[in-house]
Image (cartoon, rainbow, N blue to C red):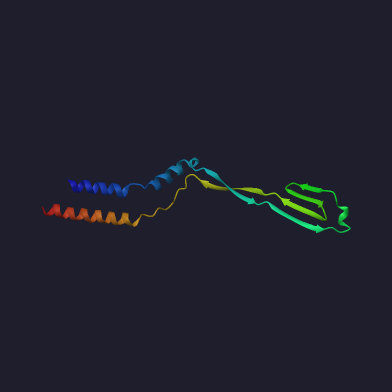
Length: 142
Protein backbone atom coordinates (compact mmCIF):
# COMPACT_ATOMS: atom_id res chain seq x y z
CA UNK A 1 0.00 0.00 0.00
CA UNK A 2 2.79 2.41 0.89
CA UNK A 3 4.56 1.60 -2.33
CA UNK A 4 1.54 2.47 -4.44
CA UNK A 5 1.11 5.76 -2.61
CA UNK A 6 4.79 6.59 -3.06
CA UNK A 7 4.63 5.72 -6.76
CA UNK A 8 1.59 7.96 -7.24
CA UNK A 9 3.32 10.81 -5.39
CA UNK A 10 6.39 10.51 -7.62
CA UNK A 11 4.23 10.44 -10.75
CA UNK A 12 2.40 13.58 -9.60
CA UNK A 13 5.66 15.36 -8.79
CA UNK A 14 7.15 14.51 -12.18
CA UNK A 15 3.98 15.47 -14.06
CA UNK A 16 3.34 18.78 -12.31
CA UNK A 17 4.18 22.11 -13.94
CA UNK A 18 6.91 24.40 -12.76
CA UNK A 19 5.92 27.91 -11.64
CA UNK A 20 7.66 29.31 -14.71
CA UNK A 21 5.45 27.26 -17.05
CA UNK A 22 2.35 28.43 -15.20
CA UNK A 23 3.51 32.05 -15.47
CA UNK A 24 4.14 31.65 -19.20
CA UNK A 25 0.62 30.27 -19.69
CA UNK A 26 -0.85 33.13 -17.67
CA UNK A 27 1.06 35.75 -19.66
CA UNK A 28 0.00 34.09 -22.91
CA UNK A 29 -3.67 34.37 -21.88
CA UNK A 30 -3.34 37.88 -20.38
CA UNK A 31 -0.56 39.85 -22.11
CA UNK A 32 -1.65 43.07 -20.37
CA UNK A 33 0.08 41.78 -17.23
CA UNK A 34 3.46 42.56 -18.79
CA UNK A 35 3.97 46.29 -18.41
CA UNK A 36 7.05 48.20 -19.44
CA UNK A 37 7.95 50.83 -16.86
CA UNK A 38 10.81 53.28 -16.61
CA UNK A 39 13.23 53.60 -13.73
CA UNK A 40 14.77 57.06 -13.29
CA UNK A 41 18.35 57.35 -12.06
CA UNK A 42 19.74 60.79 -11.23
CA UNK A 43 23.43 61.49 -11.78
CA UNK A 44 24.82 64.68 -10.17
CA UNK A 45 28.09 66.41 -11.06
CA UNK A 46 29.39 69.14 -8.72
CA UNK A 47 31.66 71.86 -10.12
CA UNK A 48 33.76 73.67 -7.53
CA UNK A 49 34.10 77.46 -7.27
CA UNK A 50 37.18 78.78 -9.10
CA UNK A 51 38.94 81.96 -7.96
CA UNK A 52 41.92 83.75 -9.51
CA UNK A 53 43.61 87.10 -8.95
CA UNK A 54 46.57 89.01 -10.25
CA UNK A 55 48.42 92.29 -9.51
CA UNK A 56 49.98 94.85 -11.89
CA UNK A 57 52.47 97.43 -10.69
CA UNK A 58 51.57 101.04 -11.37
CA UNK A 59 52.69 102.39 -14.70
CA UNK A 60 51.66 105.46 -16.58
CA UNK A 61 48.94 103.63 -18.50
CA UNK A 62 47.52 101.95 -15.40
CA UNK A 63 47.17 105.25 -13.51
CA UNK A 64 44.20 106.03 -15.73
CA UNK A 65 42.34 102.98 -14.31
CA UNK A 66 41.69 104.31 -10.79
CA UNK A 67 38.00 103.38 -10.72
CA UNK A 68 36.64 100.06 -9.53
CA UNK A 69 35.14 98.01 -12.33
CA UNK A 70 32.99 94.94 -11.66
CA UNK A 71 31.71 92.74 -14.47
CA UNK A 72 29.04 90.17 -13.55
CA UNK A 73 27.86 87.60 -16.06
CA UNK A 74 25.75 84.68 -14.75
CA UNK A 75 28.17 82.83 -12.48
CA UNK A 76 31.31 84.76 -13.52
CA UNK A 77 32.37 87.89 -11.61
CA UNK A 78 35.46 89.95 -12.51
CA UNK A 79 36.52 92.92 -10.36
CA UNK A 80 39.30 95.39 -11.14
CA UNK A 81 40.37 98.08 -8.64
CA UNK A 82 43.30 100.38 -7.89
CA UNK A 83 45.02 100.38 -4.49
CA UNK A 84 48.13 102.45 -3.71
CA UNK A 85 50.56 101.73 -6.53
CA UNK A 86 49.02 98.51 -7.85
CA UNK A 87 46.04 97.41 -9.87
CA UNK A 88 44.26 94.26 -8.68
CA UNK A 89 42.14 92.02 -10.88
CA UNK A 90 40.08 89.30 -9.22
CA UNK A 91 37.93 86.73 -10.96
CA UNK A 92 35.50 84.19 -9.54
CA UNK A 93 33.41 81.54 -11.24
CA UNK A 94 30.80 80.15 -8.83
CA UNK A 95 30.32 76.42 -8.47
CA UNK A 96 27.39 74.63 -9.98
CA UNK A 97 25.63 71.27 -9.92
CA UNK A 98 24.62 69.50 -13.08
CA UNK A 99 21.85 66.96 -12.57
CA UNK A 100 21.28 64.44 -15.34
CA UNK A 101 18.31 62.06 -15.40
CA UNK A 102 18.90 58.64 -16.93
CA UNK A 103 15.75 56.66 -17.82
CA UNK A 104 16.06 52.86 -17.84
CA UNK A 105 13.06 50.87 -19.16
CA UNK A 106 12.29 47.49 -17.57
CA UNK A 107 9.47 44.93 -17.52
CA UNK A 108 7.52 43.93 -14.41
CA UNK A 109 7.23 40.28 -15.43
CA UNK A 110 9.80 38.64 -17.64
CA UNK A 111 8.75 35.11 -18.61
CA UNK A 112 11.55 32.66 -19.34
CA UNK A 113 10.98 30.25 -22.18
CA UNK A 114 13.35 27.49 -21.08
CA UNK A 115 14.00 26.52 -17.47
CA UNK A 116 16.88 24.22 -16.58
CA UNK A 117 16.31 21.61 -13.92
CA UNK A 118 18.93 21.88 -11.16
CA UNK A 119 21.34 18.93 -10.86
CA UNK A 120 20.38 18.21 -7.26
CA UNK A 121 16.72 17.70 -8.31
CA UNK A 122 17.75 15.04 -10.81
CA UNK A 123 19.87 13.30 -8.17
CA UNK A 124 16.97 13.37 -5.67
CA UNK A 125 14.53 11.95 -8.24
CA UNK A 126 16.90 9.17 -9.28
CA UNK A 127 17.44 8.34 -5.60
CA UNK A 128 13.67 8.17 -5.00
CA UNK A 129 13.17 5.89 -8.00
CA UNK A 130 15.93 3.56 -6.78
CA UNK A 131 14.42 3.58 -3.29
CA UNK A 132 10.99 2.68 -4.68
CA UNK A 133 12.44 -0.12 -6.77
CA UNK A 134 14.23 -1.54 -3.72
CA UNK A 135 11.05 -1.25 -1.63
CA UNK A 136 9.09 -2.99 -4.39
CA UNK A 137 11.60 -5.85 -4.57
CA UNK A 138 11.53 -6.19 -0.78
CA UNK A 139 7.73 -6.34 -0.66
CA UNK A 140 7.65 -8.96 -3.43
CA UNK A 141 10.05 -11.21 -1.47
CA UNK A 142 7.83 -11.11 1.61
